[in-house]
Length: 495
Image 1 (tube, rainbow, N blue to C red):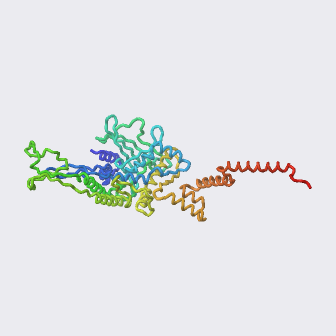
Image 2 (tube, rainbow, N blue to C red; image 1 turned 60 degrees about the horizontal axis):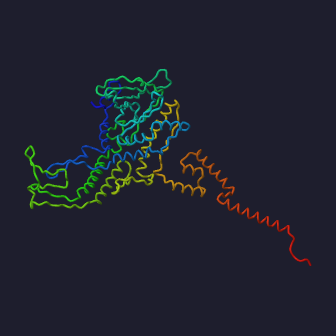
Image 3 (spheres, helix red, strand yellow; image 1 turned 60 degrees about the vertical axis):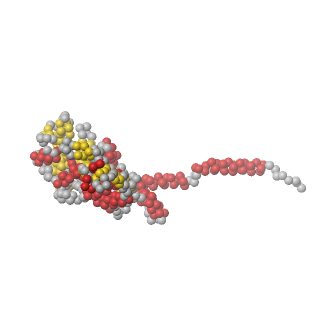
């Protein structure tokens, strides 16, 4: 029995309704494309005139490339999570959880498999821990209008040589003596991966943890696109769920492109009667040379006219294939929300990603802003959950995403200089836009600029100090000379 079936059975037997979800049956297919090895597609056969030969299709790996790009656009090193006075402590906790690396990887997997989650808890030493959970480990229990309110997270572990499922169930409940109407409880379970029976927990794990918190200590993230596989499912779908045909198209054209060079060499048509033969055990005669070698093609007996080895020299259609690859990339890029022109096929270096500044009216920008809505909510919830576990306090959080993909910093600086010089914008506003800071930081920067202005205002030119000193020395010498001349009597003859 699969782990999924065991977990669903366990949840149902213990009073948690884990609904059958058509979306989950597609996760394995999306994973195959993400890994770049789809058995039924990338393995194919070609008839060489005698037998069917098995071949491995050349591939571009665009499914993973697309997910990498979305992760870099949404959650890169420039994304700032601002939390006021708590921000320094928050960054320390995030750093201890390797958040900058793991969160980017989680977003990549989320866009590949459709769903991901941040899960927060405290370990036995009291440290705040963040887990990064992929789609196949997430089992929604209840949801409201697509928003998952209760959820189980399952992982397969090997304990003492035995395959075990670790379940962490986040559920809502009511505590009689609590001020909260409802609070979240976390149940920790070990389940036998074969029988589905409960196993004993280790001494350092509590079976039930009262969080004293009315918000979930998990945040679900998905691509912000509608799930058209199961309209009632709270799970998301892969960003390329509806682009499998386009992924196939890219690999088919690229495979043909590479084979154009492989098969562009001279080929030899071999009359089958002229090849050395050997008898197999079943009495069938087969050629001795390697049937996997595509240089040779055996001509059947009924098609041999002159019984000679025939050489075929093929012309490579490189430009036609390169155009076809580019068209395939444009269609795929448009389908996954990145618009056309995102990827360029360079015959010398493969697929390259466009790095130029994008327009705020482009498909890529608009879809990126749409995906950012879910990402901002998840990051805010994660930061609040971390603060609660760490201090028990509520904090205010804002998320600043990286806008460098749409901002040309040189153009921004030039624009603000012109507006300030023209009296159409204050220096404070210009600093805020250029430095992407609030008014407090802008005022500090403006004060520093003013201090620099005072120093300049003293007309001290440090680079010209030596010249100034020499001028002073010369003037002093001239003054001394004048004084000495005034003490001497005037020359001349008295009449």
